[in-house]
Amino acid sequence: MDREKQKVSHPYYKKIYFDILTKKFPDKLDECNKILSKKQLSVLDIIQLNQKIFGNNEIFSENQRLRSYDYESIVKILDYQQKNNLSNTQLSIHFKMSRNTIAKWKSKFKV
Image (cartoon, rainbow, N blue to C red; front, top):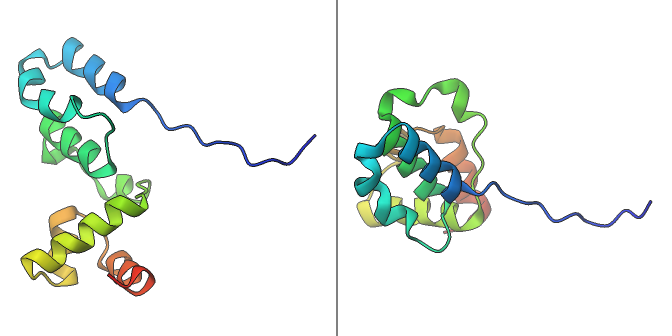
């Protein structure tokens, strides 16, 4: 068996969220259609969709451990911090993540 790198396939979030909206939340379809019409969804788009559909009450601390961010999303988050002149604590509250993660990203990516 060859030990080649396997291409990691990501879930097809557009289809998943479109199905959720059409079956359970048809009233929110117009509100989320702008995000779903994008060619490719980023991690931040998925978080935004999740908040629009299920509300802010759906985010729990147990779920935070399971999130993963790609490079582009990390850079967008750190740029958001610089543009709005936020501290690590303020940014962590805004994005509901650990301030230690943000500090680690800042030292690693030097943005």
